[in-house]
Length: 253
Image (cartoon, rainbow, N blue to C red):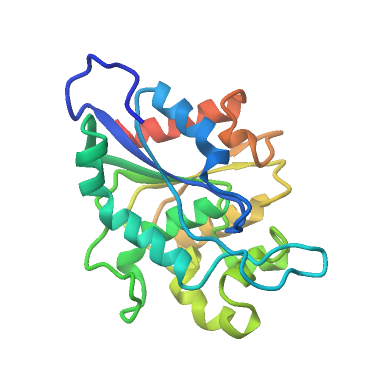
């Protein structure tokens, strides 16, 4: 999506890469975050709204909840999308300035944004590892599932992070390859935006990540919004969404 000013010179718009949430489950695709992407485009950003493979193939839980995520496909897709981005942007978003790229994501997409910015600190045998950090101005993670251990204690999204890693058999062994709280420090400017009234991904998940970053010697911004739940962060009609856009702008500009 182009920036809002058609008369703007080429390569003038910061690029925002959006990763949608939905507990990595198939029923939630990138369409539900399209209004947020459109909102950012109207604010003058060039926006890439990324899709990826999600869970849905496999037995449902007793309550009918489909499985979350696919291992390793979900991570394959995010890595491939970020690797392909420079060429795609040149072709499809010529007005974007890739030197001013901010990665943002909501909920499960917030997890994926933090993970994508940490590929250079993945274990040496990880297929998605990069030699150096991604060329990002920063990451703005919105109510991210940023610490799987805390998320599981709180049963976030019906134990979606446990399912993403393949259940109990895969959880401990795959966490070092997938859990952002274990992939610190990144050296990339990172801000978390979290509603204090969020019941889907409660505040302690983001706080745990920020605390782990501090212990790793990295300052991670944590913007806590009073009386804000999970979805106002990506709802253009909500005041919280304007706060998110401002956090993105502070990194992008």
